[in-house]
Length: 225
Image (tube, rainbow, N blue to C red):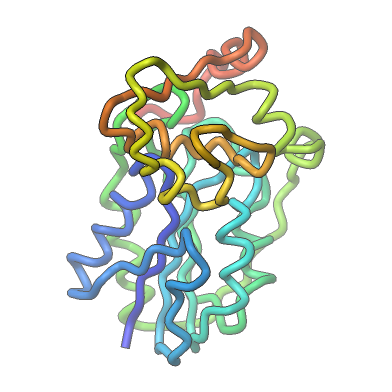
């Protein structure tokens, strides 16, 4: 039995997870909330998640050791700027054998780019799933920025604020993977996944970026979509 687990803030990772769900005829388990994790054994678990500030998102880091599976496929989506050393770090958290791992470039959340990706990369992963065989991941050079208070840096770089259009529906509070929103106020647990912004029915949540982050986002991208 195969299972697909996914954490997605604004839809880029879920688009990749849906490719696997359609190909393997199975459902996707949202790992935004710990309580949603099925603890029954699976043959192969495919885990899809985004890279945040060169690191594994906190909800994913918490859930990975709890997934019960013989084999693992790790898919890290990123906005074509930096991957850190996320796949190797993720491989150290799972209790099972890694049979495939891949960074999948897609649109960047903070640049409001669409969730486009190269399907051929994922088709190669399907071959590994069909014929499972252990792979050894190489530890990559992580760089200094992902190590320096990544969550604090993201809060400094990105501000989320409410407008007068807010009708206090509390959907942002209910859907926040970090439980970081209370009565519309966002606390320091926020990881700036922007799920609240994307899913607000009134578009009452807005985002602003500081000049340093804007300059960083203008750097030459690694690949073109």
